[in-house]
Figure 1 (cartoon, rainbow, N blue to C red):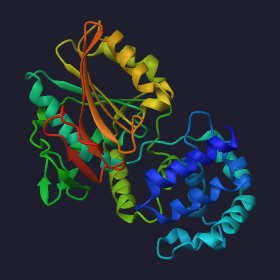
Figure 2: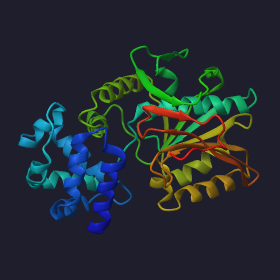
Figure 3: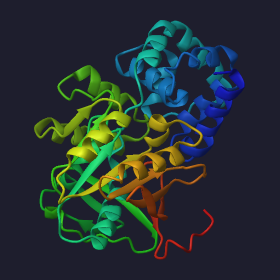
Length: 353
């Protein structure tokens, strides 16, 4: 990837994801964007992986493992990194740890570790259930990583003071989400949802401390609540491991569709995984073509969360049958990490966000 393209990616990450959430990562991303030496390093990111997430994750990973450097003190979340010092500190840290950083970003990948996104999925599941009959619903999380979002029915939810406790909710794993507007459906019959399945090209081994430590390193230093939730979810997953099919999504999707019980509704979930699987630009369109083709075998339902070319992430639901898309609409806007939700009462009336 060329320097100009990489610099744009880091600036975009600073503007769209880090701003207002992680002052440290916003400062570091802007530093990388204007420093050719750091862009050279970031260029070694594994193809298809987001360079900002990978470089920041690698730096955090090294620091969490005991690195000593003046930059480390700013990863505690208690002290703000002055922009005037950022370039020199970050460049020096990366020079000293260049070999380990290159090895990490060239071999690892960004894995789904944002459990809070389940707060966005739950109302989407409830809305889907309202539209279907009483046959079982099987959820397939495509790009499942460690499968933490497959355990959505194990978490406790707090929607701005409204507590949602499901039959198997763990009281110690609480996910919070602010409802900015609208009235998302929060009533659902969990018993109708059969054991979910994940698809992941490189499943995370929950018994491997190094693998789970990488997931933790992908969190942001200032976000202590997010870190606690992740560790709690990892503990739940270790006790009741989710079912994850290893392999390329393109191959496994066809298998899942072909092998699913004929009396089950099949709901495919893509949480910021579409472009990693189907490429960018045009990934959303290629996904729709793929699901339309697979729907020649049976009806399929889709719930996707992502930016889809917009500044604000959105939740898209779609249905496919007999080889064609029969429905597609944006039902909500949300935060990248599921901390707030704007539910559209009438999806046809979409405000400019």
